[in-house]
Length: 179
Image (tube, rainbow, N blue to C red; front, side, top):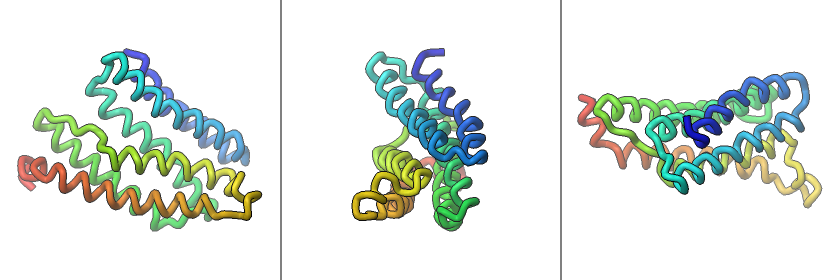
């Protein structure tokens, strides 16, 4: 297994530790771990492209690892009342739709890599979650700009945009899948 794929798996392995930190009230350390895990997303992609290590495993597992990390955090934030449940439902609906599309494509031997709007959505999520975990720090001291809320709304909007883009861009996959 190459280094980029190991970093992707490391992101998945970090999730139970992130959850444990969060549930034991260590939100600062859970945010630190979330940020570190998120950083591996950029690093694994960079290393894979730079060194010619792009694999089908990485194309599938990298976005899945992101989903596991982000959805875990968002569900925990719903539990604490920091994120509205409907927002997570919108995000989950998009993720299931894209994953279903990828599954249908894979049955035909196709791999649908992440598109730019999907990558932007992921980056927005990986910025919003730590802001939410840290109660809008440092913006609470900068005129209390609601950066956490603004980023959360940007995530939901980009989730919808990227979901529509995936479906439209890959509508031929639905036709091949008998849908």
